[in-house]
Length: 392
Image 1 (cartoon, rainbow, N blue to C red):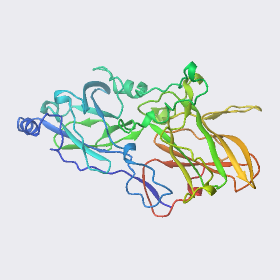
Image 2 (image 1 turned 90 degrees about the horizontal axis):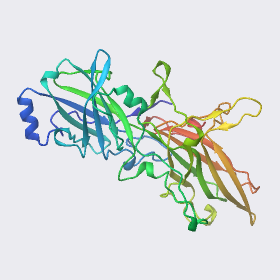
Image 3 (image 1 turned 90 degrees about the vertical axis):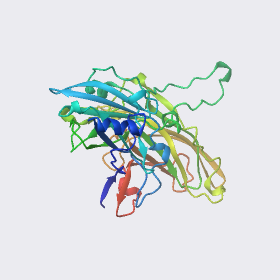
Image 4 (image 1 turned 120 degrees about the horizontal axis):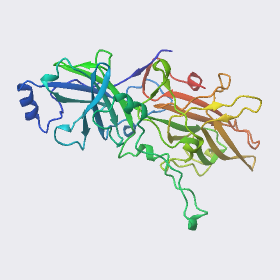
């Protein structure tokens, strides 16, 4: 099976939305000898999927609601922040206006002084996050290596008078508020390089990547009913940019134990109140967007008493058969079931699906689970996907 990622490309039109307050100012600047630098941005959209078990995206999961551009001048290998430009709340000439193509692609241009010809720059982008901007003169490396997302999650707390009430859901859904969008980041490239030597007529590519992962839960067993779902060991915070390890490899961050929390089910996701066999026209339960979470490492300690140290999906359930109801619970780790039971790290921009089943077995506690891992991008393939294709 051939599989490749598809990113929607935006048209590179030099005179589209600009950092100027009007099109006439842009024309005036060009006539005065300044340059335009165009950015064609692609997001991990859900369009153009030939075959799929289910849609992997919807518009709130890839739309740009806000965007910040960080321009760094590079001299002798050292980067220095020269200006910050924003959509939609920049000021004066620091406003950028990305124009959508309706399919997850965006294009805009900025004015660059003609005096900058021959100078080298890099451009970092952050979408849908309002973290504190770095100071002018600071390096691109310090920003990408240390800056975390603005949203830091916390355990929901009950008031004393509400001791017996259900915990409020303040975690899974807040990372993807439809009005704010999912935080994404990326860097501009020209001819495959992030270091761009200025000249007239340049169009840079920017591939934005979500900084969070998503977890779905799916089952079609007619006599299984979930009564509780939560995600344990979710990081309270996450980095805007993927962290680099030795040899420029991607390094999944790990945190102190105090930096993890129990994440409640997305408030926009409801557990079915009955078994499928008692429900008309429903054959499969899909808890899409059950959780969004920041990336983290999952490990197994060494020795005879080896234990799993990582995130897990905890469920409580009822199994109904032959007039009897059996209760059970299952703590599902992010571990491979088809590759020596190795740990599976939580990676940004990745979709994890928990498949549950019990084969109509009426015995209490007999519920199996397997983990499916998908690239959370558009996929162009020439064969239908099956669960076995991506089983972990």
